[in-house]
Length: 291
Image 1 (spheres, rainbow, N blue to C red):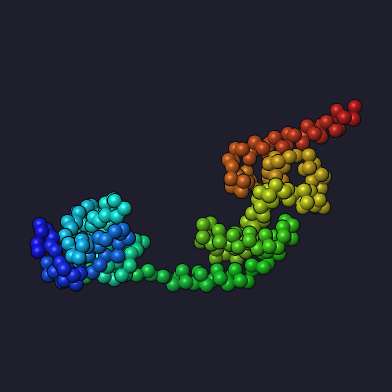
Image 2: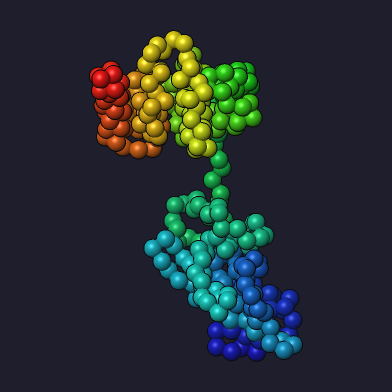
């Protein structure tokens, strides 16, 4: 029985057969995440149908696709809302994937986004260049050969425990080889040295985050820094940390700003205030207090 742009059918196989006759092609169920008793079918030439069971019979209506700038779109209903989905994605999921996924969108062989037939769709293959394979193999060897060495270095240099040193060492390695990747450094022999240097910085930040001051236990009792170290305990907070980093460890203001995630002008001001504070402290004990 024909009704408008649809028809009634006694069984679902009969409905599928009629849809194939009207589309002059094969049809498949679109695995959309719909609610209720409505189902959507699509042909390999882009015809779409909505099938709904009413009583003991099936009513089938041919859907009208929407032409958008990005290509054809299929309209479907779920949760009392209308949705629009790329027609090529619906077709590819129905005939090839057999389940619903929307992370991989097929491409068009002829470049025409309006030519939505199954034979024109394909998924581009991921190409892995040999240089990337070689780089991953090299990084794996570097990590395996130097991981424990860097851990022991951080433990000796900052006094951090070995378990925390392992976490920081792994984190720094991932940063240098991904987010902080620099092709001019990573192939250089000094990569392990950079790994250690960044690890020391992260270790200091780790102590600061835990409201512990690594400089009290480590730098303030160093024998090769002279009398200057004895004045550090009179400073407090970020002034002491930035003073040590700039005047003792030799970091520039911009480098300290990156470590502390602050502005360069702020670091420069804190270092300057720390120096002025130490000068006033010395003048007080050398002149004022002695008199």
